[in-house]
Amino acid sequence: MSLAWRNLQKPFYLETSLRILQMRPSLSLGASRIAVPKLTLHTKHSMPPCDFSPEKYQSLAYSRVLAIHKQHLSPVDTAYFRKPLLLHQGHMEWLFDSEGNRYLDFFSGIVTVSVGHCHPKVSAVAKKQIDRLWHTSSVFFHSPMHEYAEKLSALLPEPLKVIFLVNSGSEANDLAMVMARAHSNHTDIISFRGAYHGCSPYTLGLTNVGIYKMEVPGGIGCQSVSSETLTFLQ
Ligand SMILES: Cc1ncc(COP(=O)(O)O)c(C=O)c1O
Image 1 (tube, rainbow, N blue to C red):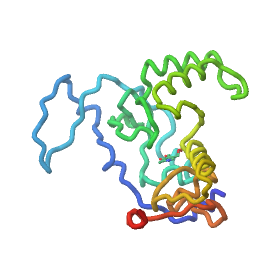
Image 2 (cartoon, protein in one colour; image 1 turned 30 degrees about the horizontal axis):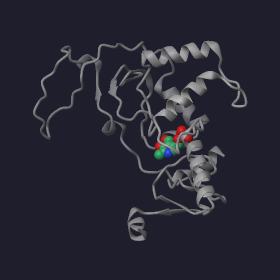
Image 3 (tube, helix red, strand yellow; image 1 turned 30 degrees about the vertical axis):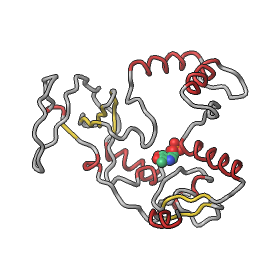
């Protein structure tokens, strides 16, 4: 299977460095208030100060991580970057790589709602839960799930006050596809070319990124369109 992935065409690359502002810790500003400079094309970027120091990275060297990745992991995981960051630690809105470089994280796990990295409040609750009960099954009750469902549904209007908890974006989209089909009694779903909607067998039909497309039957009823076609259809 992994060989099949490897032989598929690589998609376009995004340069990490263009996506995320980077600054070495040695350049960090000490002042807590900074005047906003006038920006021009030649203005060098800078970031707000941060008083958090990451732990020293003492794990695998980048070359070793790369070698393991090539040998044992699917290349789709890092297909968008020529040289993916080797991230080491996170603190609130900041990320630190294995060399101690600091990044302001505008990305946050790709379309995943996030509250930043290692927020002390969130970490404390997660640690408490980890020490109490890890996993059972949804066939049993465990009150935090019900508390969460009640709080979440309080934010939603009728008739959306029913919560179905899933583990991933792919699962959420699977569910959305089933619900849409069951409700409309139609099968066809259109999605944009170049769009990524997940890697489950169901969502692979909607995902239109070369590296994820296999020459096997799947995605029945899923049609890919360009944005121009969609405008035309509308
Ligand atoms: C737009 C979009 N949809 C779906 C997914 C799938 O989410 P997951 O990787 O949690 O299955 C992603 C993941 O990056 C995504 O960006």
